Length: 172
Image 1 (cartoon, rainbow, N blue to C red):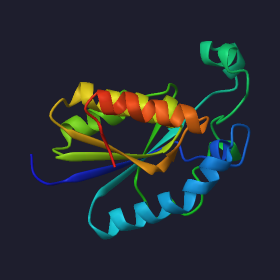
Image 2: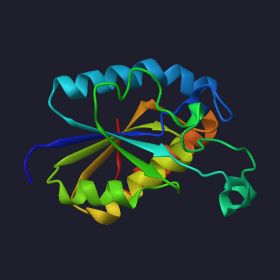
Image 3: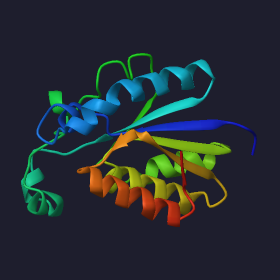
């Protein structure tokens, strides 16, 4: 492995910031995430994005039955990444579940020395993707930038950070 670094921006979509599942915390981290993406590109890091992706049958899925709030339906405004993030390119991984095995494979096969995650929701999708990265690439140094993440609640955000720390994911 060389010193290549991957920045994975997790689910920074309209529905998680302004829409059906939007939170003040997600709106608060958005400028920091945009700045982190800008710096990553400036430093030659590989920047990728995940996008929570549901279809019209969302309410009849297991997730929809447990969280009956239609969100991030493919093609909708709520599904789109926030302005200022992906306009300058970067691979996007559409994921029908909390974590993306495709992202984890990309990281494992990409020769990266380090992967950093930012985004939402710390306690659902960020933690799922961080743990998948560790499973697919056990020697990959994985970190989560706490001030560029937001959970469903501030308490669940802190709980997720503690759980990731216990799984040898660096919290920065």
